[in-house]
Length: 174
Image 1 (cartoon, one colour):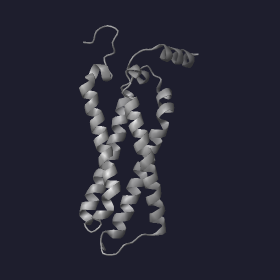
Image 2: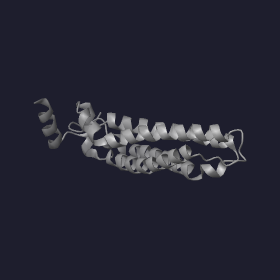
Image 3: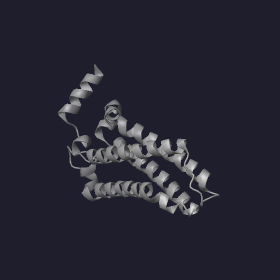
Image 4: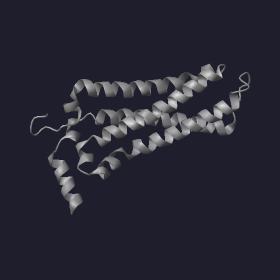
């Protein structure tokens, strides 16, 4: 049991080690995603290896989104019903994550469709190039917003009652 006045959830109740573990998992998944984005074209000659890396990359993006959502659900702000505040603050990350995942899946499908049977030819259509640029641009923004959000969610003030939260709650109830 937690002492009176302390929340039963959040980084301080999970202890620093557990939050550090979650942060390490998130940053590891981001690092893997960056690795695949950086070096997947070097594995063009081995389509099976590239396919496996693409599948793992897409799953890692999905896991990162799930982890952020679980962290948002664990905040005191969410638990008192002020979901709109969290959605307003983290809307950019949530929308960008969905967009990045969509771009990644489409790009990976298109690349594997073009290159699966003929790995000796370098096929690069105009549409594929545009999608590649959008996916890579979205990835840079995704890395920035995801890292910023994961560090922000480590703030203990999100996991306890505070005067600013009471003011927001009072404004919502009126």
